[in-house]
Image 1 (cartoon, rainbow, N blue to C red):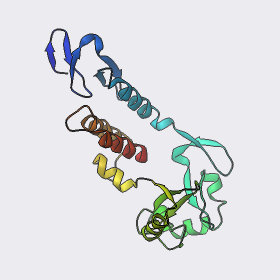
Image 2 (image 1 turned 120 degrees about the horizontal axis):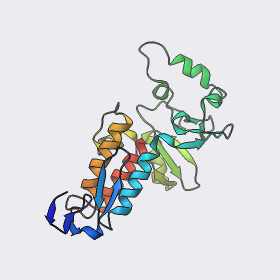
Image 3 (image 1 turned 60 degrees about the vertical axis):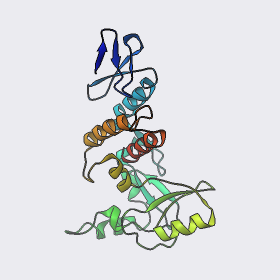
Length: 216
């Protein structure tokens, strides 16, 4: 923190110089502390909360309805195009899943997720990561680029989720980045993107948060 005088210091979030009485110290999960002005303190607390719960997040399996760590859950596209999230136990019960998974485990083969990625509309293999699309009737589809663009032209797309490759580019991390590296990149980028800084804006701040949410 840059000290302006004996009673004023700079906010670690936006850089503004405020009185010491206005600063709040927020401790991040990695042990570092940041001093924030009243405007930045809520954002810092939210970032600390999300980071501390990164390894503890849990979700429900759509098959057995058990609550398990989200890292154990996997999204699967059913033959009718429906996307379900299932635990490892239920994954083996998905029609056609076991044989496809075995076929992709040989030496030199693609990872199962890449080998099995198919568009839920045209059923053609998708090169790379499919687009996760939420339709206006609240269905989730995993589409190839052509089917996504066709759906957008028909006006049935409510939202398109950020792809992992885009999220990594925003945070500046590699495809094999660890959770800690992603976390550190987020903390660095979110400071620069803060709307109270000259280098930041509301849209940039939201973009960095969305990128971190996608990878976490």
